[in-house]
Length: 327
Ligand SMILES: NC(=O)c1ccc[n+]([C@@H]2O[C@H](COP(=O)([O-])OP(=O)(O)OC[C@H]3O[C@@H](n4cnc5c(N)ncnc54)[C@H](OP(=O)(O)O)[C@@H]3O)[C@@H](O)[C@H]2O)c1
Image 1 (tube, rainbow, N blue to C red):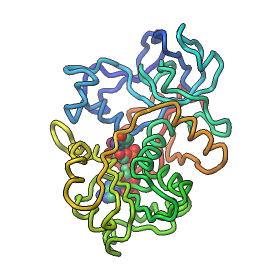
Image 2 (image 1 turned 60 degrees about the vertical axis):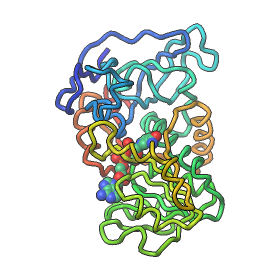
Image 3 (image 1 turned 30 degrees about the horizontal axis):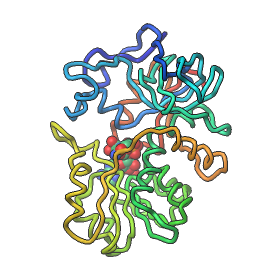
């Protein structure tokens, strides 16, 4: 099969479209014929091996899994002996074990769910990491109806889902984005938008019951100033920050300590992909409450260009690759 492969950690230039063996499935896994896969900053981290802490999971000297990519949508073509929830022919979405920038990929059954019937494979592939992260952030922050919620990075992969999901939870949304994304963020349901190139998020004082910080590039002191005294700050982003060992993620890890000083709750979000969350999202998508925003779609062979585009840090929604140009 064809796949986007790298033998060492490094830049997008090190990625190659190569013929490799089809992955074999374990007892608890399904083999998926990939129709589309999506990108997120986590894939960039797995590609570069930076921050270094990722190598503890992905391979110390070189990547254990040569094929890049995690989020996937496609059709199940084989199931392991222990798989009970899925069968060949099912259209699914989820996250992979073996790398989703390929014609075939394996996934554990508990990380895969039936694809929303009203979505294309490209749209479905946009969801497994970003929408699940948005959903878990909202739960972690205990968003309640009627609250005021500020979302940084509101036009990005996680943020574009978070805006829509906070509305589902019955809260009001202020989105933070750059000038060219204002209309997009409003169209997703934000009542108010802060253009971060013109205003800071604390311009109105301590107004927000919850801040969901996906952009990850504002000091905590600033986030605190914009949050009500008993409010919650959910730290999601940090991957763009430099830092040899942990990148920007030390802030998430330190969240329990950060909560000790002051009356505000600080939560470090560490998303976990679970089929139950995908099923909840499927219900919301099929009801028309949530729709993925696709910024750009690339053919599998052009995945290196897709990675370079993502790395600029300003997608309008999600970037996807389609296997062999299929939709
Ligand atoms: N904690 C977890 O479990 C978890 C899970 C998934 C992702 N993440 C992290 O969450 C972060 C966001 O992921 P994503 O997929 O949403 O990324 P993304 O799609 O690349 O979006 C990045 C966002 O950051 C905004 N941004 C860029 N520069 C900015 C600046 N100077 N000031 C304010 N905003 C700025 C962009 O807004 P404009 O385009 O408007 O500039 C864009 O909306 C990443 O760090 C990722 O690693 C964490």
